[in-house]
Length: 424
Image 1 (cartoon, rainbow, N blue to C red):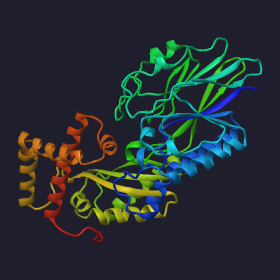
Image 2: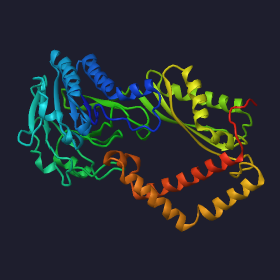
Image 3: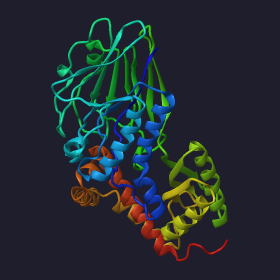
Image 4: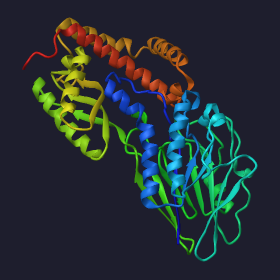
């Protein structure tokens, strides 16, 4: 018989909301419960596939926000696996270090939590007598500036060796440098499979040995958009490893772009939005889709779309309501005037707009003042939210420039007239 296991990481159970516009109570409940639903779906997959083990490679929790209610839910899910004889192997990641659950929760008997002392467990024996070992290095600290690879023992001879490591590898945008190591170092260690965690984007780094970063099983905001998954691995009796990506997340965030170039009427804009929503809904036919609409293009509706964002959002929400499982997070407008410029109204407003775009927005003093305000804003955010808001300095500069432009266009739109929803 082969040895089969599911590899997941970065569940961030009960992660706090970080989306921008979750004003809808039902949508808030959906997102708040999505990480729990993902864990239940992972357990369901393990049971349906009759696997031998589940590997959880760090960041099971989401820092200090978790509670004993989270612990009770987690224990119940792990007991479902225990009842079917499925073993669970766990290592901790940087977010787990702040959780109080790790000191209070007693895992079921089927769970092995790797510590710094015991680093290898025989998980199974193949039909030909070849043993399968799972290796892991526990690390209970939010920061790991040095590689953890030296803490792993060498591979057992004539065996299948599986390593569990929470690592940023050589670095990844938006993620702390954590237990850094190179791909060549992992390959050289001699294990047959490296089960990685920490980076939320799925990537198969190498096929032989098989090195997989599964990504997170459930996105939490628009910056973690797209379908999410876990990895199902089969170790054949001849030692051959095969892997499959299995979609898990019950709610997927998506950016949906809508080009309104040439659209002249409000009803025409709603029709274009409706068509885009239909296409976006089909991206995840079996789950929930939480969409951020990105309106662009040259249209005489540019000013009207900006003047009353709540009205526009309400129109989009109404359109989504008729499409089961589709939600609107927010609507962003980057449309320009029909003439190809950002012209939004009468001559005085047009002249003000020209001065703002050509003289004010491009002035080094103004840009620096905006950057200072933005830095002050970021400084007031919790560290985790700040890191997810903007990953690096260059991105921060681009973001502040974009916000200044969007703010100027909103002001010009408000000056150009009033009323958004009048029939046309």
